[in-house]
Image (cartoon, rainbow, N blue to C red):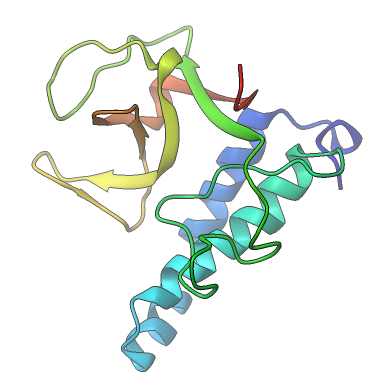
Length: 163
């Protein structure tokens, strides 16, 4: 299912992935805890990122997204689940929503998210971020830093890695 065939934007597809994470989290954590294997959750998130987001947004042969968060641990040196040797051609970037200024929760300063890459969804408790629902914040990164911003203040866009 390609994005244009279903009439969805990159923004909506990434938000739908966030909804999927939240809706499935309790069940997946039950199995992760039962196996006492933290890497299961990383593998699960990456596998579903590839299935739900990458296959919908990357519509041409040999197009792949950057990994979600820390990626998977199931394929040795690769952080991917499917096509472990594939190199990313695209990434998800964020732009400010028209209604909000974007403020980094860590530094409490205004941020231009346009030159940052989306890493993953997180929750924020005013002191630290956590990988758990409600996933109402996005962890963005650049070469040197990470930033935590409310999902409501940004929009998600697909961009070629070499742009």
